[in-house]
Amino acid sequence: MAKRELEEISAGSMADIAFLLLIFFLVTTTVEVDAGIGRNMPLKVDPNTPPPKIDIHDRDVLEIKANSNDQLLVESKLTEFEDLEDIVREYFTANMETETNPKMPAYTQITIPYCQQKIGAINAKLNDNPDDVVIKSELDNWKAKLELCRSLPDQSYPEISKMAIIRLENQAGTSYGLYIQIQNVLKKVVNELRIEYCDNVWGKDYFALKDDDPEDADIISKLRILVPERIVEAKIER
Image 1 (cartoon, rainbow, N blue to C red):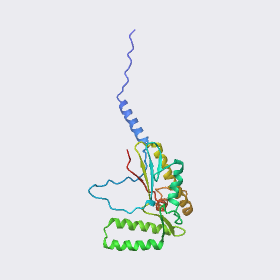
Image 2 (cartoon, helix red, strand yellow):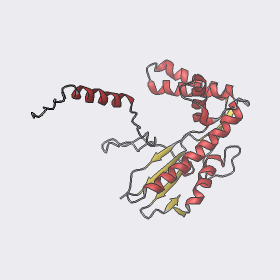
Image 3 (cartoon, one colour):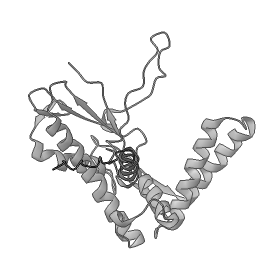
Image 4 (cartoon, one colour):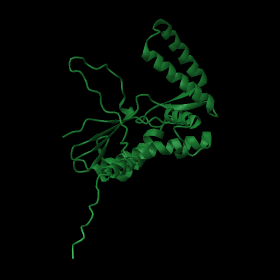
């Protein structure tokens, strides 16, 4: 009895099917991208051009260091990590209402007349230098402060020193876990202060604000003026 020959399966269309499946997965799959931590890094200095001298008081800088043994030093003093949050909060709030601590940043009360005075002086400078981008930026800044004052119940607010920064420095051996814990504390204190303003002034949940909503975006920009997040990462020490 003759053997029945098996018919061959045509694989000509398999490549097309595989290609279509590949396209399907590429289109439908979402890839998560780490946003990272937004921080200011020290600018590269030209050794042939000395940087401009800036008058910064010791009270304006909160220096936080983490060494290779995961020890925390705040203002050159060995500090327990559990105490860091209270120290950062005091840095922001010690002189917010009244000048009580000369070792912490000073505050200036920003009012509508004060903003108008500043805007008038800047406009005068802009008339002499109409193309100066620095003067234009300063003008926009004071206009934003004026708008902020008009939106507040007291039509004024306390502004922390413009030189106030938190300087974070890590040695190369500092663990990533400690680094993230420090960042979390700094962000937590800033967020808590913004939450308080957001609730008291606008009656909104800070974390519910959306960047793509014009009204929410306006509130977010005002909160960044009220509670600026000035954290500078210093060069890593070996």
